Length: 445
Image (tube, rainbow, N blue to C red; front, side, top):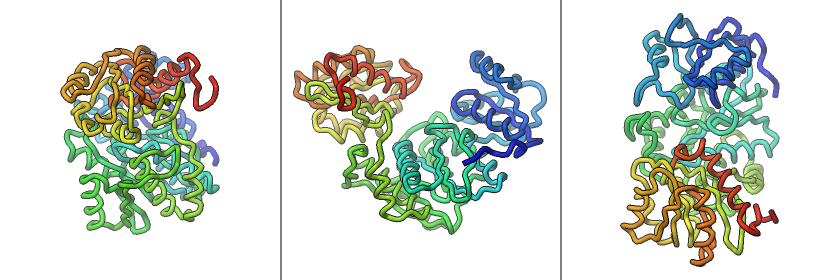
């Protein structure tokens, strides 16, 4: 692994809007490759941080717009629900709007590397599958760099040699802004309603997700989870239209047998990683070794402590009902901590799992709506309000009710009370550690 040549993008000029997790690393990388970059962020603090690094900042709604591309941070819309004014200007002036993943691909190819790209998308399971595939590859000695929607921004990744593999988690927001990026192997894990504010409806969302297979050739492999009807239909369509080889995967009725990968949903994730690793040339033995040695990810059904026989599971990454269902299905008797900013439908899709729930502690903005659903089905619940109040209350309920698991799987976004799901999960772990006599991760605190 090396750095990109300092003159790789000499003479190129890019505008970058949004200076958070993706934007500022992209600016650093492009500047290091010789490009001219002009930056903007609607937040004063973000602009000040970029200015401190010597970047040129300018309100991109004014002045010239002679750029090779606009690099738009994933969370900023260029269409629905309403185009940001800078994005609208780029569209009007025929300046391409790209994600940093697209620029990474262009940089790798311009640098002469034939390193392959593996793309992972789907409503749920992306992060686990991305991390698992990267782990399998590294354990097999393959030069590997993983990032995108998970971990480092795409343009923060190093230049890999010809035998290297970039493993990129691709959100729908990123997939709608690629132009030449081709994945040697890609997976669409599953589809359930999400991000309609950006994609309009289920058809629009599915179409964007399908872009992970765009430009694949007869040498490439498309992996598709078929445990939901929409994904199965996509597999049928890809097979009929080609030219790539299609591999169908399922976790239905299966278990991985790996402690860090509980549940049928993780069986599907493991099958996806298996299929992709094989497509990249790894042996079955190497793949199985990688899966068995996988340490797991934080905030994805991570056991963060134990007290008096009660286990505390951090599944803060469950930001929608479908993700929470995957965790709820793994345990028999649960005290559940849920709530935050709900997606469309709330927790109504989780009704089949309610018999597993001994009690619910509700937090966040949409706790009252969740309480209505729970009350309609006779599920005991309490309006804790905050996570700080919910954790000790859940512990006491678990002991009183004989539940062995306290599960934080909120089924919501976290922005009403936290900066992101990571901060929510970290606070949960801190609160568990503060319980009297608790053990953290199986060891004395």
